[in-house]
Image 1 (tube, protein in one colour):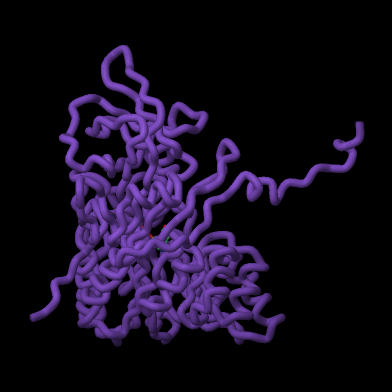
Image 2 (tube, protein in one colour; image 1 turned 120 degrees about the vertical axis):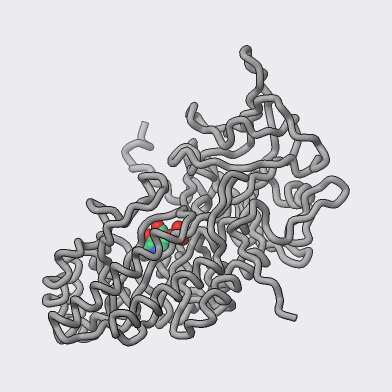
Length: 443
Ligand SMILES: Cc1ncc(COP(=O)(O)O)c(C=O)c1O
């Protein structure tokens, strides 16, 4: 019997979530014990949820073997995650020297790494060319800098060009990237000029890339990307007689943060995209290209749960209360940045009935906007362990040391074991980069 494919991105909780003795269990570990043992705030990543997400994409791509999944490291990257990437046979999208360094240190094969992002520095471009990393070029000036760098190194630069497809998905403005006027990529109208300039002994143009934005729930805008890219492959063929061999359709599939979110499943997304590529290229009498997909959030988002301890409870004159957590906007800046919504439970009292009390979960940072969830629907008490779901993507990677607070630890849970993959930052870690000019020390 065929195994059922689960697309974790459509669920609120990790795939291993269960309840035992009214405690939330993740990856076979009791979350209240995790909180006691490792302290809070604590990021918990469930390995099996990541595996399920990857398997869902692989299963959606089964009919299109000439394809590759590039995990978008910006969602969550550290050495352990790079090892997960290797173990699951994924490629990797990096956007900075730091992400590339992490990938190289973890031994991610260089042929599977793609360097994205706008305004890459010369140093980053040089590092990429030296290591044979493929580069997704974002602008004309980057192309000309890259050409110079490759010629000085005497090594070819293998590139894709990021185009602005002119597609606007239904998501927060700050995470739209494919609309006209986007800071990422070049205009479609400029592609012919770009391809002309890419004709150089040191540049090898492999294909086209587009990414419309993040937390998109429907297939439609993704299908539009395929049409745009297929048209552009025809245009380049007609103008230059070159058939581009690769298209990278980006990432951007959403996850369910609340019961109201109903994103398309990962399997359906991958199947929809690959079928669309097949149809679009067939219709235009083009050879089938190599297809790259770059999911980030939908691979790790649902795998992550943040555990907090509830602290002071402050009743409000107009009814309801604030429950203050021992973390907040420094470990999860998304609510303050994008008005992002989340779902929480009381991990040590999973049998507590939903509450009508207007409980707002606030953080401990010095901003009124440090609110993790408004009207959380739970009646938390001081000392409770609060679990916030869907924090695997863009939490650790966007976290800060605001109010000079160390970032939480992160544990990977699987089969009843929890292993630290990111140590908690201590106050001494915060001092490590500090320097005091000698004259300030003189009395
Ligand atoms: C070029 C590119 N690819 C992939 C991603 C991953 O997007 P998501 O995490 O929404 O899947 C992003 C995110 O901004 C991106 O800019």
